[in-house]
Amino acid sequence: MKKIICDYCNKESDNTTEYVLPDYVTYEAKDLKGNILYKFASSNEMHNVTKDVCPNCAKKIIGLLQLVPRVNFEEENKIETMSIKW
Ligand SMILES: [Zn+2]
Image (cartoon, rainbow, N blue to C red; front, side):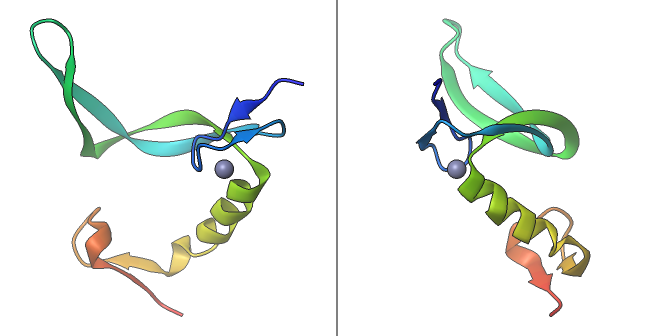
């Protein structure tokens, strides 16, 4: 059976599932030789990404998704300013 690395916990699993999730677009800054110097995520541009997710992380994602209607950001897209209404 083919083992795949979970994109969230980086553990090897033979029971991952591919999910399509939203994510911020990530850009890479490279030097003249093409070596990646650093990566940064745009806070304005989103796209869909396919992630391999193990069952343990899938349960965590499901739980977090249920919080989405209760989440508020004081400053847009800044997780440091996030609050959850219980
Ligand atoms: Zn995982």
